[in-house]
Structures are given as structure tokens and as C-alpha cells.
Length: 72
Image (cartoon, rainbow, N blue to C red; front, side, top):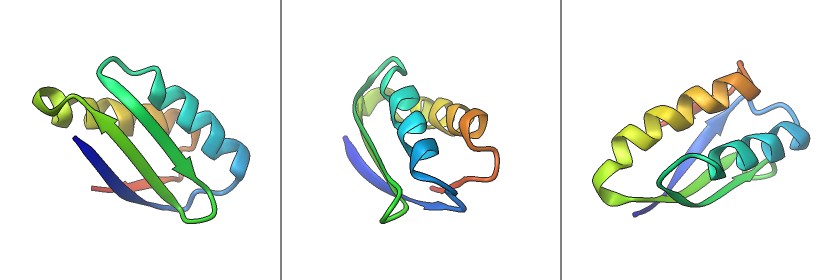
């Protein structure tokens, strides 16, 4: 399943790159892209575990950029 989520308060391109690398390492994620310019997260992950994967994505992104909010 591939979905796009809007990001709020993503402060810099470096943080976006760190978030992208961290999300891509999560088990079940096959593709991840964080765009600083468009403030969007594109993620492709296993359909059966998508909700659990998204919970892990939110936790991971908070570690990198505590102010950033993923609008689910």
C-alpha cells in the first residue's frame, strides 16, 4: 500500500533526509520519501501491517524532529 501524508512544522531539509533514512529502515517499509519542499511523507509498506508500521513511523519521526506532526 502506498500513501502520502502531509507534514506540519518540518523545519529543515537535513531533518527531512534523516527522517527518510530512519523510516526506510523500519521493518515492512518498502519505500519512503520525505519532501521538505512539499512537506509530505510518501510511504509504501506491507498492507497487512500498515497501521502498526505507521505507529512506528510516527515514533521514529518524533525522535528526529520532535516538532514535526504527521497528519494521518
